[in-house]
Length: 134
Picture 1 (cartoon, rainbow, N blue to C red):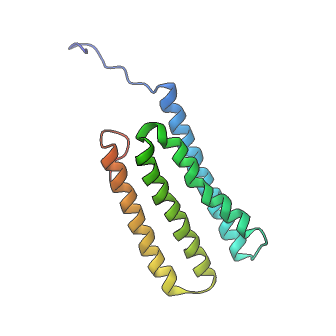
Picture 2 (cartoon, rainbow, N blue to C red):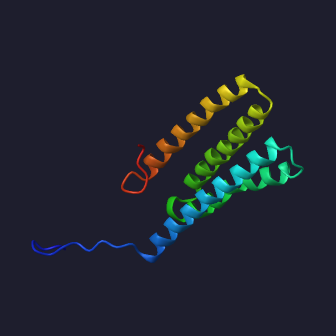
């Protein structure tokens, strides 16, 4: 209980700090592997499949991070949406390389739909303080 002249202490627990650090690390991995995939596709390198496989594993890392907080069923939905996001992102990159404007446009719209679905879902399962739709 907080009394009239007493300030509420606000601090992060060790677990919360680890969650933040791990989340940031996963976002950095996503950016790094996405960049590497774009580089491999545009330069037609032989490691495209390996890089694509590693990029596709990033959602599993995020899944493992959120499962203790949202439960298996909700984490499965997050994994599904983030994995689908990776597939669509890779489709866009390949379509851009092949000058397939129609696929780029339709896949970009799908990417926005997935982002909206994920934002809505995360806001529904944890609307208190962690994920808000906006």
